[in-house]
Image (cartoon, rainbow, N blue to C red; front, side, top):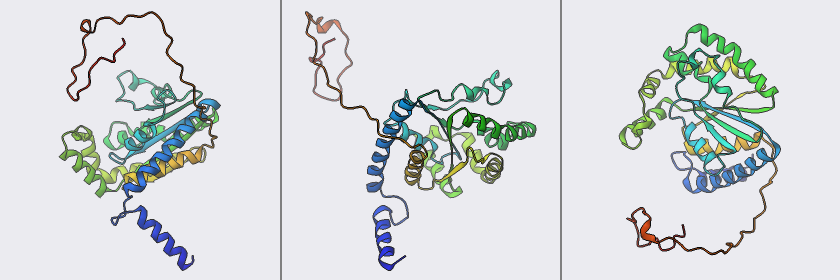
Length: 287
């Protein structure tokens, strides 16, 4: 690389990143807006082509899975792009075939489903916390690659992302949640135990990757100590994995109101929410 090219790259880096190495908001916001526009184009393409897209988000607590899911769904239609975040299995579900409760949430034609955690609970949280037996974990590790190959053969586009956060950064995020009452609900006993067992989770992740990082559905690791950078990198990667054309509908002509004989009921016959924040009134209301 020439000296001029090196200087140009350093100048670009200085415009994008802060002194602490994290992404500047001045770059992040417009870039996120651009990517969200592309996600809207992608959703139209998925709907038109009848694609079935499944995106799995896994990783440690506070690693940023929820943040990237929120940005993906912020501008897209919930009828096309939906989130599956399953609660703790019921007593009945615990007696089913392990993958059974996840199957009902798989995408149909024209859908993209985002799994906020998935069947990989078995080889991570359940394994480390002792919620699954050794036999159950080993059976999962044998069955999972076969299950995912079947999904891919059926026509599902399967993408798997592992959000990786350092022990130090995870600790900072947990402390931040703990310090703010409105965020404290995001800090559970399980999160605290996960932080204590950080190395145990590392070993579980390595074991999971060893058995399930398959050619048909590889794992993509997203370093996420910088959450903003992680969001941009992950969304751009998703867009890169699914070739799409811009099939955004043309602008529609907004029709005029059809006139008919109508008398509005007296205003005092209806109960309105009190207007506590402005000087406006309900005189515009037409029923």
